[in-house]
Image (cartoon, rainbow, N blue to C red; front, side, top):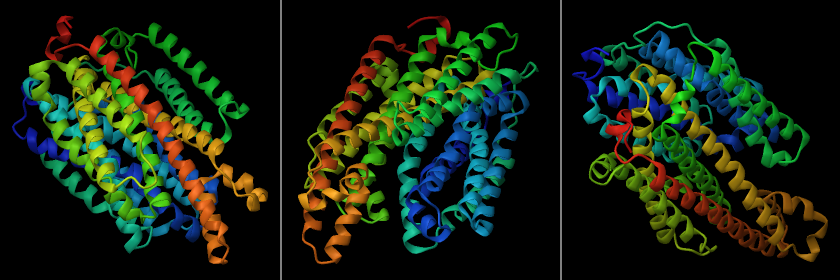
Length: 510
């Protein structure tokens, strides 16, 4: 790399632009969750269509990450970033102005996912090439803080817009922010790409798309259809076969899209594991707690999102300052400690009840956010320092893919544990035995039924709601325990296997 790409004069402005672009992607990933009831009413969308409105983005984004990161390395990271932002902006604007059916929104969300897959790897890879190594950890810490804050902020933004405006504003709000990021990027972001022009591994790209998208599809469909469902097992088998084919192809091709030698580096492999497991925990917990706030505590979407604020308040300073701790104690100790804090926070959540105060929940969220901040930033630095700068786009894409897969698994497995405990512990009043299937299969359905009975003057509705809330909280506690065990295991792996100092990785030291 020439000096322009290792220590750029405007690198802190560039970091701000990358953080803004990253926030657009992260916010897009979650804002629509709070708009689903309005979409259901306005567009007449059924449950399957609502699920695909969410999943179309996730599948397009997660499935194409590796290809999009490679395209940025090969043809230019600045170009990938700007094209991706334009795609997201056009998709968002078109949806806000012209979408009149659920199918329109699903198609637009998929298109938006492809754009986001161009943006997210480009943000991190551009940071790698404009910051010198001695400042890279701090820059990545700020980037990771923005990535962690994006989901809670997206819930707040989505909640506010839905409560005060129509659902179209959830899409339209992105456009002026994207335009600002584009204009600033044109002025300040330098061009960078691989120094040696190599042919793109199209077969590897195709196999990676099939493998990642089918894996995500199986994870998403598993809780709904059942993990032993023929369709889920078939899709999971296709993912496994395509993954094996991908590995075999990458071993024989001259210029692989993802050099498998990367995985022989402990920093790269353990870093990806730590990132994936940390997002497993965060998305699993946010999914459960959002339902808790709205259906157990009776909060509005906006109020529920605001109650998540302690999480980013813990995450942001921890991530932004984690590099100082890494310098003093080593990456393995900082990441291991962060995951240990996450595990402890989750263990405290196993004691949650229907009446636990919001203050106590806020303190738990702050502790969880602090652990996440100490985990994500150093792990990302270790991953990116483990690979050549020429492959920073691909490295960033694998980093992002581990986040996406970890988050999807968190929601799927955490939700499955929660649902199983809920079904086995819900105490259904004898008068409602005929409705047992509805009550057992859907906690929101049980709450709706209870409210309907109350409106009809039937006191059994209140009993049903209270019983359902107790069963849900028990399921949430069990799911938190599972996540805590995973965090403990990840902490042990980080302490034992992660390199101590990132600046020694290329020398083969730990």
